[in-house]
Image (cartoon, rainbow, N blue to C red; front, side, top):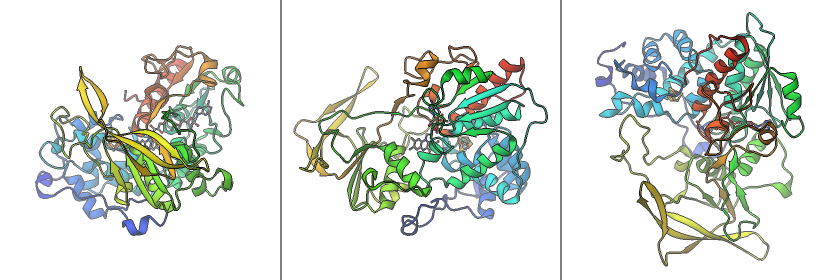
Length: 481
Ligand SMILES: Cc1cc2nc3c(=O)[nH]c(=O)nc-3n(C[C@H](O)[C@H](O)[C@H](O)COP(=O)(O)OP(=O)(O)OC[C@H]3O[C@@H](n4cnc5c(N)ncnc54)[C@H](O)[C@@H]3O)c2cc1C
Ligand code: SF4
C-alpha cells in the first residue's frame, strides 16, 4: 500500500469519455484515457485490505491491490507482469468488463470503490505503447495437437495458454474473421477492432494457427477433427437467440439484435452489404426490445446510423438507484445504470411487454402494440402480470430483438459429437472441463450460457490446465476456477 491515507485524500475520478456530440458522428472508441497523474492517485485509493474481496469479485482472481500499488509508484512494467500472470487479455477486460471487482471493493462499503477497471486498461495500454508486449512462443514442444472450436475470448485464451504450454494449436472459426463476439457482436465504438487484431498478431507469432470459414459439423466434418487432433476444446459460445413469437413477428423490419450488430460491424470492417440485405436505422423509428447490454449496443449503433427516434423496452421495472436490501455488498450491484449509448439519446421504457407488431400494406412493420405489466414475486419466482386496459402503441420502422440467448446452438457440431447437456441447455462438463465425450473439453459461454468476457477467459484458462494435464499427466498452467 503506497499511500496509507490515499483513500481519505482522493475521491474516485470519473472515467473520461469523448463528448457525445463528437462521438456519435464516428465509430471510434468512446472511452478517453485518464491523465497519468490522476490515475496514479486513483491507484493510491486502494487500501490493500487484509482480505482483498476484489480478488473474489474478479473471476480471473486478478491481483488487484498489487498492481494498484505498482501504478501509484509508477512501476508500470512490474504492473503488467503482475496483470498478465492472471489475465491473457487485460486490454479486452479493461475496456469491456462490467467490473464485478469494483462491486466487491471494500472501499465501496461506505465510499466509491477504486477505479480498478480503468487502472487495468491503463497498464496494458502503457505496455503496448512501450513495446513490452512481445510474442511468448513455447521453449519446448510436446508434439500434441489441440483443435479449438470458436475464436471468441474463450477460444483465444485457451489457445494462447495451450500454445505457451508447448502444444500445436489450431483455432477453427466458422465466420470469415477471427474474434467471436469481440469481432461481430461488440461494436467498434465500445472496442476498436485494432485492439483485437494486435492480440491475434501476437498469438500467430507464438505459433497459433487460425482457420476462418471453417464451420465444424458443416464444411469441416467433426470426424476430421477427431482424427487429426489429440484433444478438442469446444468454445463455440451461446448465441441461439431468444425469439418473440407474437403476431407480426414475420413482418419485414423485425430482426434479431445479432443480425443487426453483425452487419454493422461488417460495414465498419469495410465490407459492402447488398442493398436488399441492408438493415439500417437511418431515418427510422427504432424500437429495441430488451433493456440489457446487447440492447445498448444496438442503441449506440442506431444513433450512429442516424435513427429518427429510439425506444428501448424492458419488461422488468426500473432498477433502484442504490443496492436493494437483498443485494448487499460484496455482490454485484443490480442498480440503474446509464451506458455511454444511453447518454447519446434514447427513451427507456420499463415494465412493458410487446403484444404484437403491426404492419403496413408493404409488409413492413409500422407500429408496436405494448401493454404495461407489473412484476410480482411468488414463492421466490418473478411473475409478470399484464395491467388490464393499459395497451398503447408506438411508431416502429425497425424492431430489434435483444432479449438474450437461450444457449449454445445444438444442430451440427454438438449433436454430431453427442455431448451431454445440462438442465439449462448448456454443454455439460466435469471438474476437469471435459465433456461427456473423452478428449473433448469445453469453456466459455458454450458451457456457461451467455455471460461475460472475463468469465470466458477465466474458464478457458482453467480448461487449458485440464487439457494440459490430460495430455501430459501434469500441468504448470494456472487455473482460476
Ligand atoms: C452484443 C453483445 C455485446 C456484449 N458486450 C459485452 C461486454 O461489453 N462486456 C462483456 O464482458 N461481455 C459482453 N458480451 C458477452 C461476451 O461477448 C461473451 O460472454 C463472450 O464473447 C463469450 O466468449 P466465448 O468465447 O465463449 O464465445 P463467443 O465470443 O460467442 O465466440 C464463439 C465463436 O465460436 C464460433 N463457433 C460456434 N460454433 C462453431 C462451429 N461449429 N465451428 C466453428 N466455429 C464455431 C462462433 O462463430 C463464434 O465466433 C456481449 C455479448 C453480446 C452478444
Ligand atoms: S477483469 Fe473485470 S472483474 Fe477482473 S479486475 Fe478487471 S475489471 Fe475487475
